Length: 311
Image (tube, rainbow, N blue to C red; front, side, top):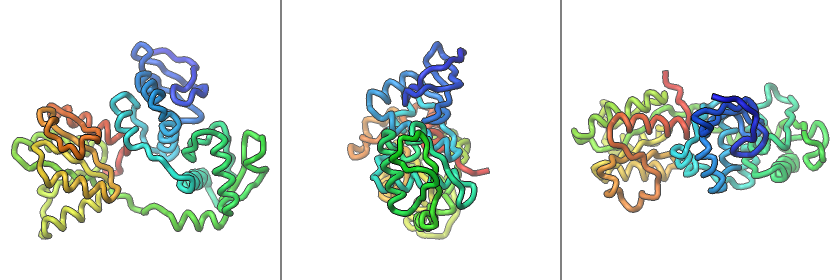
């Protein structure tokens, strides 16, 4: 392992605490703009080629700011991350920025200092100029008020505080106070798939600190279709293993997608060619053994959603 100072492989800003391993392929670093993370050079090259650097930087920074785990970004996890990187509208970016300012506010009326060159990923902005525009929009809407200067000034920093109207705006758009820790599992109940559940999916979700739910594994007296719909709505995300091509699995996954619930697609390698054409555009975890399924699913869930809160 070597330690050095060098540019961040995502945003090119000078990074600190850079640790280089695997003969220079893997970098662990702390970037004032992106946050702290580990990335392989191969993944960094793919991100640059696909021009997702700004959004990847914002994704890492948001997770760092909120205290969520940032899993290693490699060529495998990057595909899943890229598939889920959002493209926000201007008003959505302003809301994200206001939430970021709230995270930095320990009491109402506290001044928050932002550094234009470092903090524009907080608003999922592509560059400093866009960040200034978004800040100015919050001022014009009366959601923040300046304590010194203006976002238009040449100063590298800007001090502001959230206004009473800003807090009211945040309250009106608050996320649910209780976020489900349940992961709904849609898969074939055939006996040959029992190892995939017992040794693959279930342990991966438990390791990720989520509570796996499979409708046949829990006692209930409800109609099965009502139970499925209810439990999908109650879940943070859904794991859909389409091996053996059961129509019910596709229905449950499609229902979750319609609700905006993330879906992690899985399929056994010998059944990959049979995946329905409507879902082939989604990145699938292709597995050969329950152990490989457990390893990949844990990696993907950790990279995209971070750990759950199950005991």
